Image (tube, rainbow, N blue to C red; front, side, top):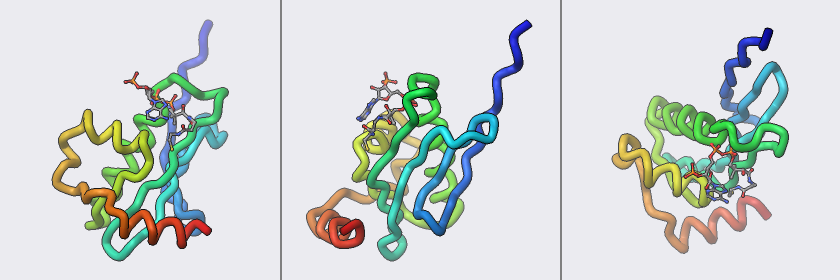
Length: 112
Ligand SMILES: CC(C)(COP(=O)(O)OP(=O)(O)OC[C@H]1O[C@@H](n2cnc3c(N)ncnc32)[C@H](O)[C@@H]1OP(=O)(O)O)[C@@H](O)C(=O)NCCC(=O)NCCS
């Protein structure tokens, strides 16, 4: 008999500037951010190969962006996956700020 599939859990890890998604207690992926004033700038999303193609990135980003809303912050989608997700999820449109050259320069310094 097959086991019931584990429910993925998303957690914000402030000390590492990222949200992590866990399946059965194992870290399956993350979406990384830096805070720029009231803006949460998402710059990278990854799901481990072993968990790819199961919709985990979508679930992770959905929960992360919901947390941004609850935190009263705004979203800057530098990460191409987050940008693509937002094109398909109008419900976050009121929270999205554009990716500007200034933000990209700031992010480069932050990540250096
Ligand atoms: C991109 C990635 C996070 C997707 O993880 P996943 O859990 O398999 O994704 P999901 O099952 O939730 O969604 C798959 C969707 O992601 C899209 N996708 C895959 N790679 C992508 C990329 N680099 N940029 C944007 N979208 C991407 C697919 O086209 C697919 O879209 P569809 O639903 O319209 O077919 C994962 O493949 C990964 O870690 N890739 C390597 C790192 C990377 O390229 N990150 C994105 C840029 S920072």
